[in-house]
Image (cartoon, rainbow, N blue to C red):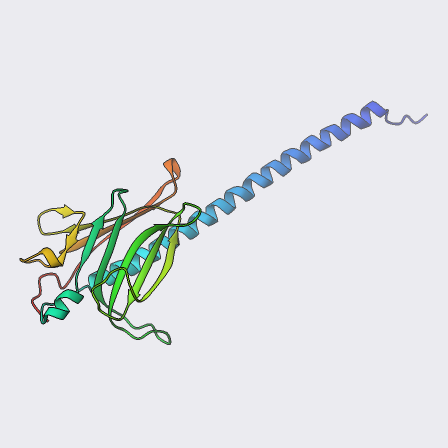
Length: 209
């Protein structure tokens, strides 16, 4: 005589199956979330590294000249630290050409952090081929890095690292900082990630050009 499953046994088997499937689904979902988070963090680090690499290249080629009054005004190097601890940076540099896109040449470049409508901090870059000495007007301004929590610029004057610089107020060498350190951070608390770079300014000790 063949004996079938009782209703209780069927219900118990279904409950065990549901539990196993729930555990499998939870493990899969957790792995997928970890993978997505890791990919997002990798993209963020890559984007910040590209920004720092570009900024270091531009800083290395920064220049200042006092050949004429106009040029003296138009080629300033300025770094300010706001009350929120965020730096603003503007300088004149010689940009390398981008094949098929933009020609190289002299340009005024600026970096600053602004807060958007949602309250998120975003790093913006401004570029102007018109050397008018104004770090906030003209040219093209666009976002290059969202979610920034810190943007810190320090300048080396040969003795100390300082958080401010203004060529218009300097009457002795070096008119440009000998080196510049830039730090970018994003995220909050234990999730904060930081990248830092420093570069010499090769024309810092050169005379008028």
